[in-house]
Image (cartoon, rainbow, N blue to C red; front, side, top):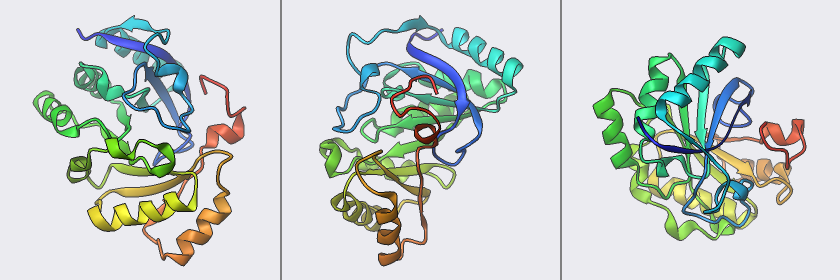
Length: 227
């Protein structure tokens, strides 16, 4: 049945990534193995973070209701770090059976191989949006670089940047690992001017990289939850 620590669930627009602007169901889980300096969901990462116990079946019921009420086609599993939920592959299978396009937002430290092997047995493969933590996060040493070889063209690699140092490091990582998926640079809200990032992209001829802004932080208060 699966056991999950559900921090919150809501329907809103995707604030970033390939499906930015599209309605989606968000399932947020508690717990994370990293402590990024600029994390905007730290409240969900603590050991004593409030949560609702859930099963894969009860979460599928939430998804069914979202389909009926809002006609959603996308669901985003986020956190915290959703891959820390032991039965997350089982959940992906149930969501796929509902005809939903599932995206997992993962922090780059959790090895993808064990998870993808479970998905293969179930017969499903969600889209991955994987972070690579840059120097400003103070978590780069925890990155599992083996993960790069499991990213496919429909996945996304995201670099959250707070400084020019971060931008230069992102270029180094791209050149070293040559990821085969779509690549985004995303500014830490209030820490770096997006216009500066555009100039950096021009200077470094990053024509295969895209800049993305977190739409939800421009539509609502940046600290607002459940959006």
